[in-house]
Length: 80
Image (tube, rainbow, N blue to C red):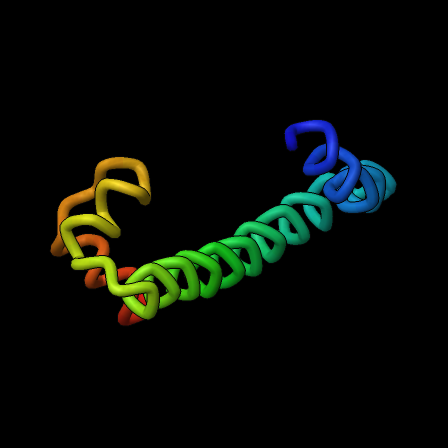
C-alpha cells in the first residue's frame, strides 16, 4: 500500500518541488495540508459510519480504527 500511496502522491511532490519561489512553495504546502485534512476527515467519517452501518458499536469501531476511544470514533462519525 505504501508504494501505491507514494505513486499517488508523486504528482503533488513534483508540483511542490517545481515551485521555485520558496514563499509561494510554503503557501502551496499549507494549502495542500488544509486539503489533506479535509480529505482525511471525510474518509475517517466514511469509515466510522460504514462500520456502524455494518452493525458495529462505537467501541468496536474505535478498536478497528486504531484503538481510539468510542467517543473519538463517534466524533469521526460526525466529521469532527
